[in-house]
Amino acid sequence: MGKASVQTGSICSITLTAQVNGIPVYSWKLVSTDKLKEGQRDSQALRDMEKRILKDLDDSIKTRDAEHTTVDDLFDQLIYG
Image (cartoon, rainbow, N blue to C red; front, top):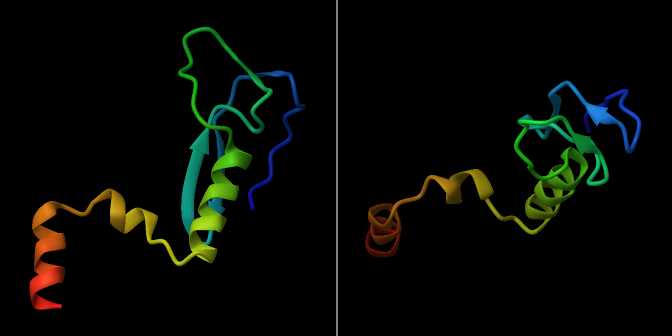
């Protein structure tokens, strides 16, 4: 899990980065209660993203592959194995 030195409830002015099993994840917020500066898009907090990725890995869900899979890819897997 990544490390950051941002207090909960503070206004984040940096992009937080972590790697979960080699997968880079980015967020403006460390935890969901962090406030954003004006103009920053609201996104999922870094800790929540890490939890979701680790849960998907435990459940053997290939999230990154699923995000880039097309209908043609699914058809090929079904027909050709």
